[in-house]
Length: 458
Image (tube, rainbow, N blue to C red; front, side):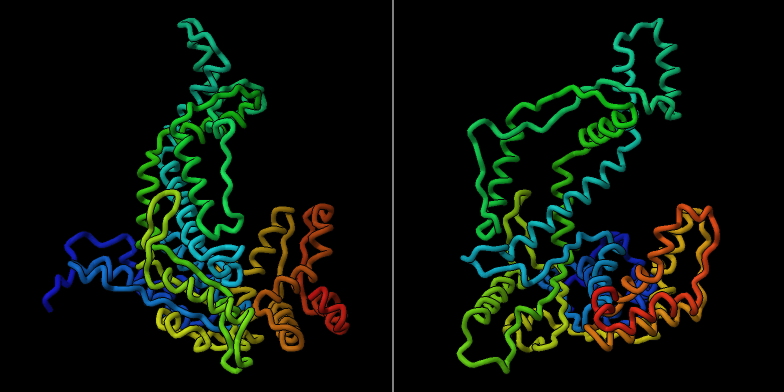
């Protein structure tokens, strides 16, 4: 090997996220779908490996984009979303059907990258403001004390110290105080920005950029507001934190994260595929769908997108596409786009056993959520094991009989089951509540038996 095999820099923080570890973490939130979890875990590890490769070869290693194939409600979006949370990566979910071909009214495909950058900027800004939160709170407290005691004399220092103690304890939260807050400079009179409503030509981005430039030139405005001390502390802490953060660093870090770690989840990609068995002489919607595919292609292949914060290269953004592919297959996408999604994973439909596990096993399972919510009312909510199994069985039955919406069916079943308890919970005075098979049958069986009613409720 003639290239520098391993870079000499220290390992990234996510070095401990081996593929096996990633799968284990995803298992805490998502039941089953082992093949999909393995695929995204390897894709994530390959990113870490690429950063460790030295020389020119590093830039040549492209991410292995993934297509997740499966019906709705089986975990496609959740897998990608949890993967991004694991790494702290900027993550954006878009629907392929929202995009239109260049030249038509609608959302252009480059908007997905601009939106991803905006999210990354917010993410980095929040992190940096959290790092200076302590100093920001101290500065905000000083400004509140200045408003409460405008005259800073030595004789009043003792009073000021006492007020600071009361402020820290929250004893002054309800008192009203007048504070001076800084406002962003508004656009100069007579200047208006007319962006394309769909962003088709990037005019929205251009308008936003010009607006940002003018904000830096125009003087900042201040206004006096009368609010409670509690509200003043929040407003002033946010303002001070923003002032302590280096905005140039925010932008540079955000752009780097997008380019090296960004994840774009393109849902419903099957809706822009053109089935091979379709009618000959394709026109109209078929041509439009192919046009969207061709517009997406350069973004996935690697191009430079202009955003309000600077240029972004998409070469190493990970794209995860998903679709049910009921009437089409991934091979119905244009060949060039197919080649940019080399990894294809089929997710399995959820049966009764998988639905039962989803109800109780994940870290934030539905059963745990309802137990926690009822606990806020002082109610000890308990689910019998056989009741959970019956809920899952009924959900599977409705999925088979009507449209299969996967695990989303469990949400409607649980709401119908516990609607009466949720309504009357405040008046129960903490009386425990148990969900057994009899309750499940009594509440859900009549709905399940009425097919017309079940379509609306379940």
